[in-house]
Figure 1 (cartoon, rainbow, N blue to C red):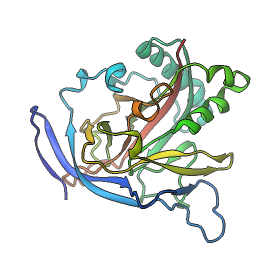
Figure 2: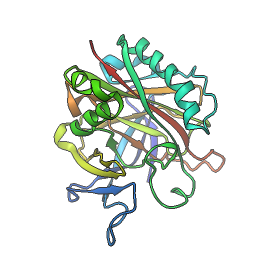
Figure 3: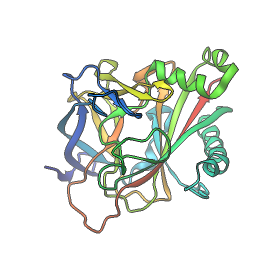
Figure 4: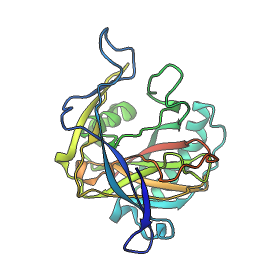
Length: 282
């Protein structure tokens, strides 16, 4: 059950279920290809815990990417054709790179991945999660997109012969996220902004055609502090850090979809866009 009330600092807060990874599930695996005979597509075990999620609506301008690991911005992206992956890469990636330079002060940046997440009958037509491109399922369990191996793997995949040199530099990975329809009240994205430690994370082995590519699920701890921005519109943008090679999992912002307390039959189903960028410090 979810309950909405006033928080100590004057904003709204809700009590809602957060889908954590069970600590009894130490080696979960998700297949983005056909699994071996007898294995499920996913062996992730969810443990739902009721937590307080603060609504930062009205205070969203008070967060800074460098200090807090996340911020909220006006969405001034010229989206172009979102039905064409190549068009997205050609049209939207340079805009995301330019905004990353502006926000971080880092010149060497590279947009490398994007996806649209939709909640349509709970999953895609064939029941599989998506490995990239236009269509992905809503991620309703708490996770961080990278661990040391998979963060370095992204650099190797997308920078070619320069990878080993670049990996000797500090690098960070950022995620731009925004709704495609709004106001968003169906499975909004929540961020775990404080209280998580490296020992709270459990690697999840994602299996792609290119091989294993692990992420990190988050196990429950009562110290976790959660926030979200209620009723996000397509002209609003969330930017958060999912990796910092100098701080590893301590520098990331775990995240996942949550449910708001009140059913809103007229709310559009969740449709959101995400775009990821690597920034290489000098």
